[in-house]
Length: 492
Image (cartoon, rainbow, N blue to C red):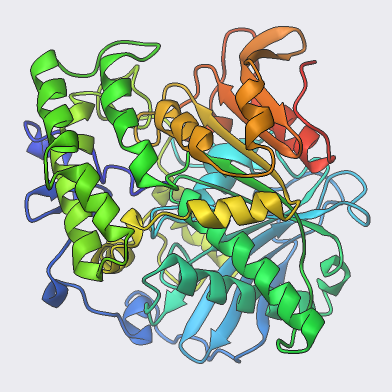
């Protein structure tokens, strides 16, 4: 996710704002720190609560198999641990084999966003084999887990995110892509996982994953070309699918969606007309948000792009959220759902079984700050997305209509702005109702190998929600299964 309250405009309720979940930087929610306030952490700092950190072996995995935590389906293999990129950089993973036919099933990776948010969010709150209980003390089996028919690999990245630890020197989506590629090369070479190396492969992600997903996919395709031509050494990754949920990909086309959504969404207006008017002026005025985003993406420096983030989030994104939870607008801030993960993931009874070596936190503010200083947020990844779609990778974009932070109005405007081989066909399509076992669950379009789905009643974490007559996570699982089967979206 985007850092959970990076943009929650609750200026009047300071008592509710605590810790790294609400980064207010120089008075701006989702703002940008001064360069001097953002320092890379050394590997030792990650182990403040551990007596003797293990010694990484660069290029190797450290693995605990079949811990019995989370996946309790009889006979289903799971493994958790670290891929050591270097002596000071270790990336955490948690793998779950498919519940059915794992020896032939494709492999997918899941990444939450932030930047700096742990993919354990997706595992325990959204699509993993288990879900966190409402009291945050335990888990129960998830009947709509995405590992029913696919092998699923959750990865905490960049280094420093979630259970990952080490020197935190990744501050752009491009650097993140290189580290993830390096990790996967290590993972595929390990004898325990080598059999997955030549399976069909999917990248699934959400939120800041609108940056990560297209950038990772484009980098993987380029690396594959390099392997083919002999300029890159490694294992070819058979990228077949890219899935992006509630993503921020192209700020220029998406930021007007905040104004539109705050004024008119399926639930209620978020703010009064005077706030809408001020945000509209901030978007359109000379030197305003629109002009700053254009300047950023016309060769702008890090400082130019960071200034655009500060201005646009301070004048548009933050103020327009009003008193509502930006991840689920039917509820005032703070929405207690989904339940918190810290009590469970920092319980020694759990951590001692899974092999984790770092105190877990939902999000790492240091990583967020480093990305903010490079202006990565405001740098469009639309061209990467277009390249991936045009390369024949089956791509689905999806969102929940109750999410503000990466709302469907901005997401659909971004899709409409794409220039791909399927864009002319997509423009001629009308939305059709997406049903799950006969129950309306959303609206969708297909064009070639590109699909889009808007899910009714879902917040930022689409698989975490239910809708009238549709079980929790069922619409997301149906979408996922159809796309992974190489098919367009269709109602059931």
